[in-house]
Length: 525
View 1 (cartoon, helix red, strand yellow):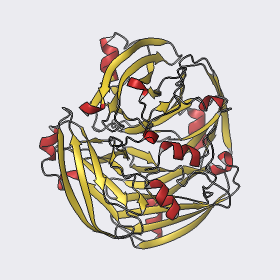
View 2 (tube, one colour; view 1 turned 45 degrees about the vertical axis):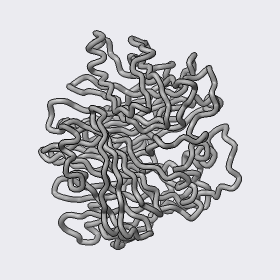
View 3 (cartoon, one colour; view 1 turned 30 degrees about the vertical axis):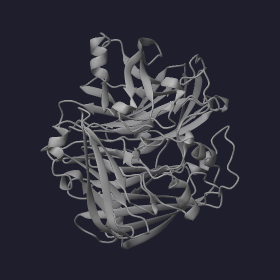
């Protein structure tokens, strides 16, 4: 794990002192576990964003398909020289190889340029899908560029955590990864499980030898025989300490459903419970700002629900969580400065069920669409990383799994407000009910800045686009859905929307709602 301060410096964050020893990033890569079977397949989605964000006119992409044992099956070279929607389809690659039947392996992407891309990981989306469901997550693992890259990211060895697990007759949890170039003589996992009564269970298991670039898909029930009993038919959380080396070990994590053959996944995150150095706490305290805060969208209609999961994964500290609820126009209907108190020594797994909250306070009919989650830390001991889970689901449908978005709360950083604006982008889907949410929230306590937004919509046919504009007042939210013009322009396929703003404080997420009750979701780039 790299410290947040070093991350801000190395990624050229606005107002940060640049690391003069940092190499330019000329290779940006990712590596994903991919599956094709009778129930679903896989693809990787991306926008040619480098041409807009970095003014890089051309990017070379090397695509490598490997089988589960790490053997290279094919390599392809593609030039990205236009801003449009792109996809890497596992089905297409297998058809070229005349492969039939099931497949389990990996796709690695390597983007190369002669200009600094700043980030060593590209903005890609992994999707598992069929016509009844999809689930997606942004770039997870990658193979390091060089020894310096490895040393920076393995400065601190921490476990991976921050996601929901289930274990019953219908739902089964997993983690997956693609090994790097270094053979592992015996993969070792030490785990700590927290159930919803906050009881702890500890253990370990071995994975055996892991070959270079081998893909591993591990169902916890196969290695933790008492998992059903531990969880007690409810969701829980798990922290995984591993001995993996030579690659960035951000894990693909999630759950399978048997009765409705489908998957819901997200990515793991650092377990910071043992991170207690000075660099693990925020040292730029400014009383004009909340310690840490984040906007989340809320969904309640058509049997939808929205839950916030608070995992016991942050650096030792105590805080009170404030909840403010708004309608789409930015009008506040509920505020509670001490909604819940969190103490790291309690190591509790907590859930905030927003539907129950608005029903209890007779707010079901006033149009609540947003929550502002604000953390007030005791003794100003503010962890640099505070991760939550956002679960949006639909009750009473075939699909029983909500999305489980891993996202970080925003620190009260005065440097951000000196930025002239912001640029974000998100996929948008036409095969179901796609929703992209954008909101104007900030950690600044007395926040009054509006935002002028320019939306450009891109499709896969060429670099043409549709432009729209919107003004957002403070605490106001806007939702993009598919209308007739967009559906015609996107040709019933995946497109992208870019969001350029004269305000640096834009936050947002994207979702895909299916008639089966399946919900895919993630935060935007």
